Image 1 (tube, rainbow, N blue to C red):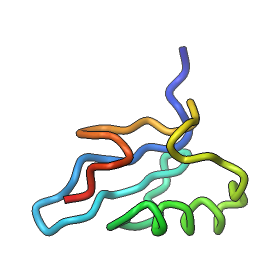
Image 2 (cartoon, rainbow, N blue to C red):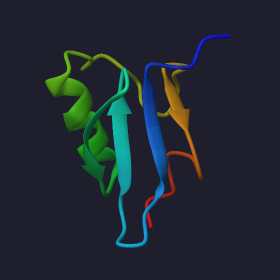
Image 3 (spheres, rainbow, N blue to C red):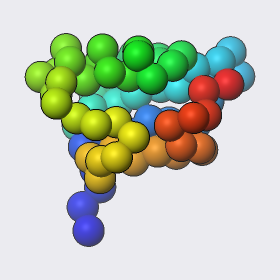
Image 4 (cartoon, rainbow, N blue to C red):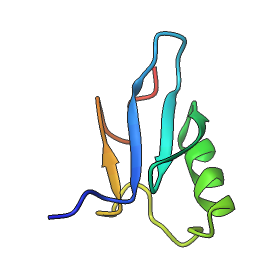
Length: 66
């Protein structure tokens, strides 16, 4: 199986989670709304972030931000 195009990395020491889309760092999300905005900017505004195979969650799921 291929790696999903969106990766939400583990929470960092300062809070939030780094987000990469197709290997490009797009920013640090501190909540779901931040992730949704990053996806919108990348043209992926129809992704259901909590119910998709397009996102690889590292270090916790959609409810882990700190």
